[in-house]
Amino acid sequence: MAATSARTLKLLSIFGIGATLTAEELAGRLGTSVRTVRRDIDTLRELGYDIEAVRGAGGGYRLGRAGRLAPVVFDEEQAVAAAVALQTVPLLLSGIRENSARALATLRQAMPARSRVHAEAFTVSAARNYWEFPAAPIDAEIIRVIGGAISRGHTVRVDCTGEDEPTTLTLEPHDLVVWAARWYLVAFDPEADRWRAMRVDRLVPRMPTGRTFERRDVPQSDPVAFVMSTHDRGDTPADWPCRGSALVALPAPVVARFAPGGSTVEHHTGSSCRLTLGAWSWAGLAGLLLTFDADLTDIEPAELRQALRSLRTRIDEGLGHAR
Image (cartoon, rainbow, N blue to C red; front, side):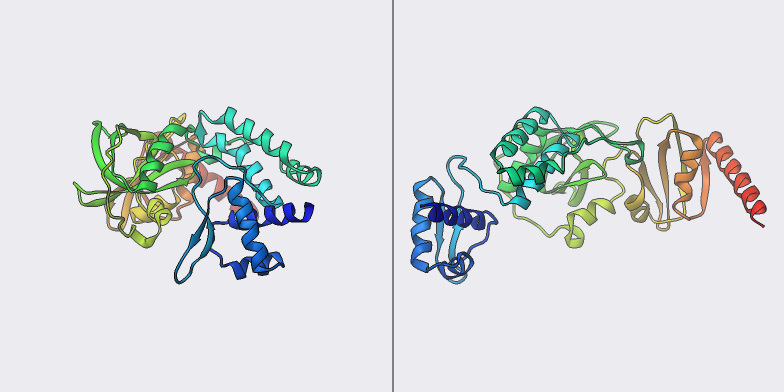
């Protein structure tokens, strides 16, 4: 009985990766017969797991969508990964801290002693620092609504609050991207006939539309690359003690990819753009601009220009002493 239970749990863990496997493949992984595999599948079904039989080429067995939340089996590596994720997710989502703590406690309680020791070695206290230029954690309910529309292939109607004048858009949502501690929605705007990368914390979803759409090919075939190279993605300058701007002799998509969070990039010409950003000091702001290793013009305000002059003087003096 103990061997049968252990084998059944291992079978459930194999199904947990989402693959469709034949009875022969499952038997090979478990080191048992096809007949035994089919008997174990019947056992899982009796326990409430929806094990689907997929017919045709590439068919086999897979874990379906159950009508209720059945017990989940993790191997040790999966349990450790889940434990770390549960400790860090409150940095990105608000309204989820208590549930994350309860889920983490439940996960640790269910672990055998050896796995618990392994997982507790990954106990972390997650915090941000100034270099991350963080945004506030986003409301988990907004992610649930927009993520649900993406998975169902439904259009979404949203109010955009980050614009100069709030607007309402109907979008075809394709992907959610987390980059630089910020959530972005990659969506196609049928009315404007263009793709958008939009800050999710600037969006307020309206009632679900229930209308479906056909998925399109995301630009660059990669939603992450699209977000990183889109300069008009809805970012706004963060509230820093010092804030300034300059024309940078680089294309807007290049600067957008490497600009720190809490900055904005505006297209100027095909080979230049205006970068607006902030920092805790004028010297820090000047240093950030210098990291782009490009010509800077039209630098504002005067305090930023003076900081750049001061840095040049210090560098000249340092190089002089180096001789």
